[in-house]
Length: 312
Image (cartoon, rainbow, N blue to C red; front, top):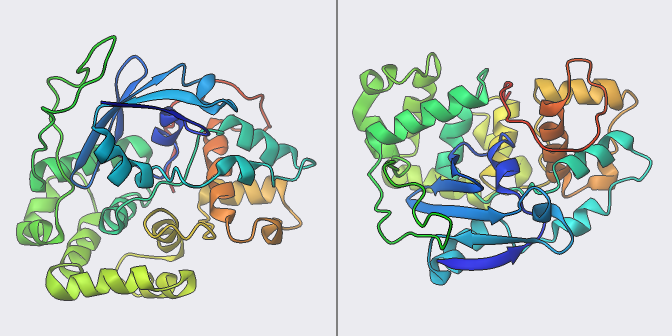
């Protein structure tokens, strides 16, 4: 178990932000996070108020300090000062000021590239609830069951995740070996062909070289490489660049972002002001948009609602 104080961090906001699909509640203020072959349970004390305050929030991790520092610290992008990024927001921009205040605990996670590619192939024309369900089914079928015996919290319940099973994200080889028949029973629809093709593309030594080429490329280069692959268009490529390669200048434009740009920035979005980190700004905008009524009116900040709308 490891305890720390984190600023600009709210695990519930991250869960519903549309960038990650393997965070789940498991009790009062407790959440499980599964990433690749890693598992952790978090307890956030007063996360709704303290989680985004200037003094930060008390967060308890079920893992050791060593694992927190070697994996989770990087995964949650805790080295980047998100407070400084928020301070760059134009004080005259009412929509963006409201969006940043509403989603102030959001960060851009440093997710595994392979897992991110498959997750956003699944996300196409899909909603967040169904994406989560499909990914969990994929992991349960082709992944390995994770050992959670060494994980515990201090209180009020030391193992709120007891009774649940958690699985690693499957390797490209495992999915490729299962073939189309293995994927068709997971409710993926037409996306199963995209996933199988990508699993074959990323398998073996040639697959590792392909993934390495993406990691070595700059944003424009990675985007171009991705868009040559079966099932990947501009929006999915930008999501992979932002969430899987941490090109935080990437600015994915889906239906929600299109509506924001049309409603609040008819003369154009001020990309130059946010050059180099526009993807972080986009994440605040996207998360806030999910909470707005159909009219799109700017609302007061408050407790976030669970995201149920389309991820793209």
